[in-house]
Length: 257
Length: 329
Image (tube, helix red, strand yellow):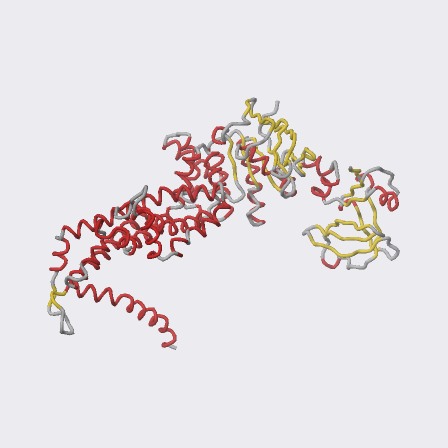
């Protein structure tokens, strides 16, 4: 009996352990001054972190990552939230085609998409390759499905027409009704999509590397370029990146409450 | 002089006209019910009154002013929806106070009026609850308070009780009637439930296929249906065509003969002319299905207990209150 009772916990625990092990190992590695031929590190220090956070190139890359992520998320929200509302309020028949459309960014492997984008935007009227602007577009298409799906799930369960009608009969104009009633009702979906797309975009590497590369060095590109330097240094970088993402999503969820 | 007048209203659906040249007057302070089967246009008519559905022709007048093309927010009309439509992001007090906030009523007065309304619907203790934490009946009372808080000139209720279970429905029905009479607000109530209409309304407007079939008090409509539809819909009448009425009852007439189930008495008798097919228990009333030659009839009797029920196959004699016969088109 006790075995049967503890079985699920044991499975869950080992799975958690398995998933956390690499992160834990990276953390330990980033904190050890030297860890070569021995089982345990020779000693611990915060040197790698101090070095990393004093590196202007790292700080610039972090800034660029935040900028391009924030920018594309802002663009996504500005376009998709009103679009999803209009689809469900006025053109519900468009939800089905949208459902297919948002699969495209995931159906097409980023490497393949990059090749197409490279030939489209290398020259011609819109020479965007090598500039952050192309990332803005790419990341928009990556965040769009996450946001649209989250919004669609909520909007389909919201009695949109009744709520709008009720608010309007109580004296609110249509934009006011949207702003005061519909938008706040979507808050949970907006934030859950925000967490997901933010951490996803912060870790994006393929598009950033193939379309822009070192000309606009984001965090992931910087990490890639530093791969030949000390493993302790890159570990500290990975842990820092991890903590920053964690901190920002935590702050957002605090704000959400 | 009526308070609300609908003059020659028409509304076209993509494939057919929903209503055409519809006229209706509503008196001030009156509780009027639009009654009819689903799809008869009653909800659309209500939404047209609210300005939520554009109409294709005709005029809507309220208190002498034409409001046909006025935006919903400028009509001073309150509305309660079938599925409550409470704002999920606001507390109960926030919902009730929303309209006052839109009107720019300052905070202290707003709070006072919100509490007054909540006391009126007996939900003062729930002011800070979120709508999702309330039962269906409570949510609908909040919706009612929200609609009434702005002191609308006209209150519209779109099947407000349909989503509730029977016991709460009965309770809220009488509460609504009390409340609107107390506040004296002119009210239009939409329902497909004839019992609700009979109990609630000062006046019933019976609708079918976008047409007003009959208008009158509950007593008038129940006792004097104008046609077969009205007879079936409101009173569960037995309808005999002219030929059958002549053959079975010796009744000389042109149209259909409508006989209410409670205007027939049945007596078990060995030489009875009719045979019991079965029965339904409606509480204090038992409704028998009876076969009389080729005609089936429904007969209502008072429920005298289980031992008094007539089993299927029993032969019965039928007696008719002929003064209650009514001929309909």
